[in-house]
Image 1 (cartoon, helix red, strand yellow):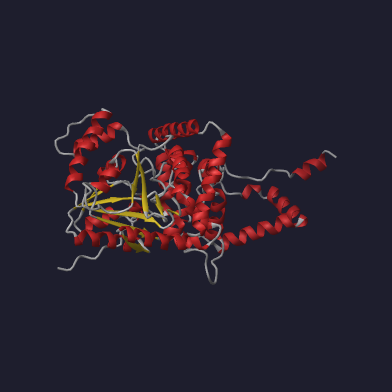
Image 2 (tube, rainbow, N blue to C red):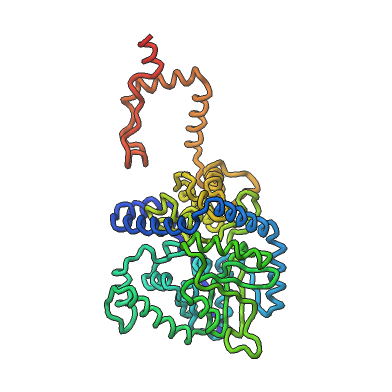
Length: 481
């Protein structure tokens, strides 16, 4: 029987609804207090890990240099990684789009007649919406990271790339478990809830046909997949099932093992305020003869999904330096007030605003690139010095400037362009360039101030209307002699 075709599974919420979703959170005092408390906690933990400003700056500079060094050699390193992994016995697959990645993974599942896939934490699997594709193909996909497991039970997306269920209270989690886990009574005791989740997942590790994980760093010289985690579920996913599938973006590659420790130190300290994570897994091959554990088959899926577009532009390439620590979210005044779900994208917050346009196009994300105060906090805390505010300004220009006639820098360029708005700003610029035009415009503005509308779009949703003064400054100075 022919296998069913994998449907297009991305359920991205358009940026047109961003304002409404953000307003819903802002109007919810409980959620605002919850996010504020969580972000303050994470910021203080990170600050405690970097008491020496000089050491932090030195480490950030080193991290930036390592990421830029490897990105500059990315095409060659990807070929070297494939050759090394293949020599080690790991099968390498290339996917340009989410649908291609899903088809590769589900094809492996079908060949093994898999019924259940147990998943370690992987934002790239969220990016391609693998769970939806697996469900459509009749294959179970169970999240084993506790936060991911909680949001899966709630049929939601993660609201943070490091702490997926940060928007949930223990009472909400207790209700979810009582309603969705057979034989479980309501309890809001945190330790009891952890034990319930652990018991369910331990059984699934033994039953699963496929284990899936993400990859934090892929080392080209040794063909090693490095996986950072705290719960041990990643080690179970990559060891217990007979087949292990890893998936990652093409940018997560480093040339040498010696490049990993500085990035690991920056990642764990920036993400969760830990000196080092509880587990650091290094996978270089399937189970060898004589070894008692590990999968008999290991696959790596390398996903593009817009990353090549970012890579092709020297400035936008800096987006790919990201090591997915989430520090920019924790310090962003927008994210800390509205959380991750308001963005509607897999990657929320500042990093989401600069990477989502490459994955989804500016048609879908033009509203997100303006959802920033450009305060610079995200750039100041980024452990690998991604100039996020600078990139946001560039993306705003790409989204709202006139569409190029040929060779656009990115998909959807000019999606937010308005001829009327452009003409208004050209007129504004002409007035401010000409002293005589400026005098005429301000004279008319002060005399016709009564015609100014009381409703002025988004401005008057939270502010009083803008209205010219009855007298110009030059008129008041003239009166005073």
